[in-house]
Amino acid sequence: MKYGYARVSTGDQKHDLQVDALQKAGCEEITTEVMSGAKSLAKRDDLLSRLVEGDELVVWRLDRLGRSTLDVLERLEDLQRRGIRFITLEGSFDTQTAMGKAMLTIMA
Image 1 (cartoon, one colour):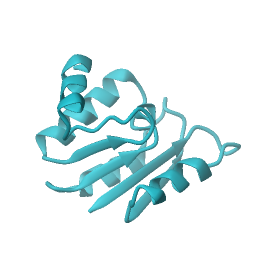
Image 2 (cartoon, one colour):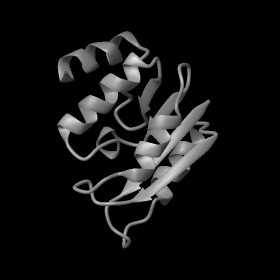
Image 3 (cartoon, helix red, strand yellow):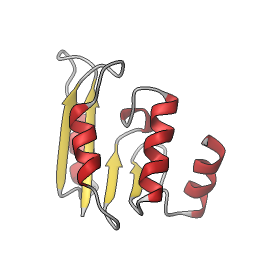
């Protein structure tokens, strides 16, 4: 199944652009969250815990996945280990392509 995750940092911001892009990308379920990256991302963590091998997780940009570089890298490593495809819409990062795997290795 293809899941989308959209996050904004404050209640003044809107998810609209992210959600529209995730819908166009074919996400069947989209989780939205309003939370500063410095705090716990409970909805993200719940979504990640439900993903199984063969699922896909799509985000608008790589920085939407986590609170820090280390947090993002840990999430990416976990997704890869569990056989879950990760895609960003902006920047075209895809862990199932050769370039995406190379980028993941470089980032790690």
